[in-house]
Image (tube, rainbow, N blue to C red):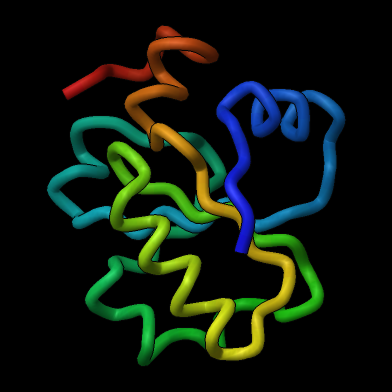
Length: 105
């Protein structure tokens, strides 16, 4: 598992790079803010839903600030996912530095 900055994620999106953006926040948080195109699997359900993820594709895991996503990314890495990144700073940093149209909370 490696960290990725919000700036790197922004570049990946602009380049059209193929990856899964995995949002592990709770449903109530999605109603407050979201990055379009992200796959939502709450952290509490991740162990039961790993079959929904492609082990061959890069996965960027995000949460609000980067803590929960780091735990989720480590879980995925420990379970055979080799191309996993944690979004450092989470959606909060992404909204503040990349896309100000996304509300902060």
